Image 1: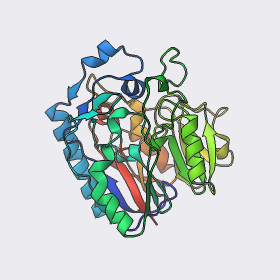
Image 2 (image 1 turned 180 degrees about the horizontal axis):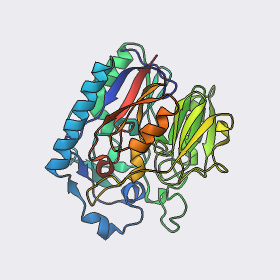
Image 3 (image 1 turned 90 degrees about the vertical axis):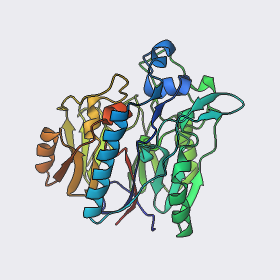
Length: 337
């Protein structure tokens, strides 16, 4: 295994695809409310706690298998995490919870060149999620990759504040961020301040990669991850969620890039506990700078990409809103050429 990736559009060679087995909605706590259900009360959240339905898990696993097979057909080497029981209790001296899922490897790992970083995810339920990938991580390390983990945080209640939902509910008490809060563009990293990434996270990341320049973005989207808001398609071309990023308000690192402001996302079905918006349809996976895997419902987006000489492979991820991840979320590119 050779780990090396600096952006999301170079030719894809090796990748991890997640799993839905034993996915479980954890009991409510401030970290879970912050990331999944900030607008709901703890009582309202409690009715969702427990295993996802067999239908959601079975259909999602079928979709993930099809995705894995398609990637292999395209010449990409595919790795899968181990199945683990996410309902198992997680107990610390300060709090207790359960796991969630290992459906979204993109959330918990950040690949920068030949380094795999275990990020300090914003949810208590994800502190041990990386364990289901340990065979893959050890193989990468044995083959020369650098591998390190961010400092483990306490996940104090004070790290989350819900007094003003117009602002990020993640405070700056600890080092906390999910990997999709970072957009990689060579030696430039765009870092979003939001419910899934705070200032301390950016400061820590900069300290670990001093040769990189981190560009802080505070205005685009205060919700969760950036990969349904800002998607670089190749050097000089970026796709924006037009509801969140506008021609007069976008990250200035893209001043000289061609910009696609897209608004027309069809409705995607979800279970009552869905945590993602319809914009999850923008969560595409680039095979190279001329080919993407995209949700089959996004016919208008496919047509728009075609105008820029980008072909699409339409595929199904039926419960992307329910489980919180599209084709970019459910994968982690390890090597791009």
